[in-house]
Image (cartoon, rainbow, N blue to C red; front, top):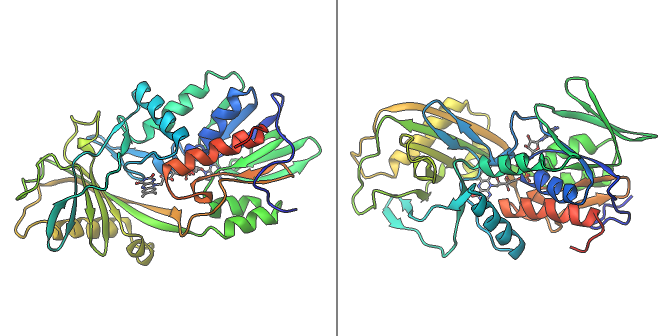
Length: 354
Ligand SMILES: Cc1cc2nc3c(=O)[nH]c(=O)nc-3n(C[C@H](O)[C@H](O)[C@H](O)COP(=O)(O)OP(=O)(O)OC[C@H]3O[C@@H](n4cnc5c(N)ncnc54)[C@H](O)[C@@H]3O)c2cc1C
């Protein structure tokens, strides 16, 4: 059976669909299907929806650990972002960006408008998850890692890691990153599993640092700087979480994202060591003798599957057996790609032209 970019048989309002993964692509797919009356049950292994748009809540601060900001280029996604702005869960950020290398700091302008979630990146996926409750035939089940599924005479039956069964379903959408999707598919759809194999993922360390007081002023840098594109072997991006809309009351709190090459080389590092090395990299980009305020907290999160090594050329993949794949990797590596992939898969499953 070949993997298809477009389904030949389509879902109806009576169809029952399971979606594994409540990141942005899975939620986008669920929304579109639910709008057309399809019975949709979403599963995620995490405590909340969001996936790589998740945020970490600490007693003193909320930190985005995956995506920090995003762009919108496709008109469909531009319209969606405007809806999210109206709903109050998205705002423009950052507007004061810098770039830094060993030779100093300069303002950073690339002409792109960027957005973030308000009051945290995961507010967007939380908003989508909450609004699913408006559809009587849609539901989200959290803390439920799907361990396997099997085809029965009645349809697809899902087994979770706690030993519970879910189903039957007419169709299963997998929106987990390709290596995780491949593990689920291997026994049932080798062609889709091979398509996952062809999308290797790169890891990324994301550290956070919360300080007792504000960073000191830097010469020739606006005190209100919000993000820093770092030219450093270890460090790629620094975000000041407390400059993001809705978080003004929290203390100085940085997200420090590592370079992908550095992350590959240090992927098995202990989190504390990775965090310290990323903070040291940031310090190396500050003018000499700059003293950082006292740290309240320093930590790091390892994303084993942060982004595809190279983007795929199809938005989603489908097999006539009633299995399909969506997620950012199949069309790109960004939030916009994730939303478009999930939305386009749903449109195709409904038999609407994409
Ligand atoms: C460090 C970092 C920085 C980034 N920076 C940017 C940026 O600047 N701009 C930008 O546009 N994008 C950025 N991205 C990419 C962006 O976050 C992703 O494109 C987007 O969030 C992917 O959404 P998704 O739904 O495809 O996948 P995910 O968000 O990965 O969702 C998949 C979901 O599947 C769940 N899951 C997996 N396996 C199972 C299972 N067996 N059972 C149940 N649930 C399961 C996971 O828990 C997860 O919630 C960044 C990502 C990272 C990690």
